[in-house]
Length: 246
Image 1 (cartoon, rainbow, N blue to C red):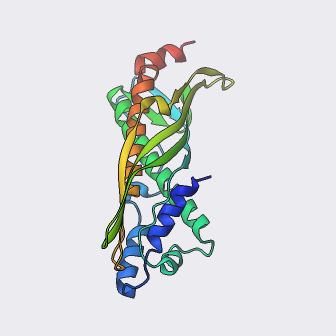
Image 2 (cartoon, helix red, strand yellow):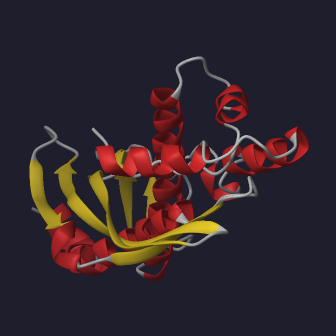
């Protein structure tokens, strides 16, 4: 479950004022729920990623991802914001939508970084018919901590930090009997990954500025990079070849 203070903070920013024009609210809400970028599109899978001149073929399964993260709510007309989310479920569905988008973003980051690594290692990725199969599993939790709150006659400003926790687990299985030949876990909290965010809510009904989404994306990109650094020795071509010969 998301932290109550995080939800209330985002909620209060979203409903801070409904005095602005509908056109402004429409633009703000559309920005809040537009796709993260091309990176947020559904994963096309690992097929064909990696070296075209391989030393070894490696079967990979879809990345399993679970994310619990703050929900970015940018806008000053909550009813319109909920309507544009395409759901009648209110804040619960908005949180679900954000979680799905962040999962897609992490999936893209993992495939990009791992794919580049495997290409350099001359490992060709496939979905089956390989001596080894790689399974990857992310369980990510991102927490907010308020560092400063400032209120003036014109706006309310909140500044804080976001920290990544959770686990990454991988396992390599052989083709015969699907026996686990090697596996490992990375405690994401030991990576000490942080990002700053700020939320600025004008008191005259103007546009709310919230960098929660950008901060979350930075953390997810860092997670993908740092996790690979932790496990790359076990995924090098020589290590995979040695494992496949067992």
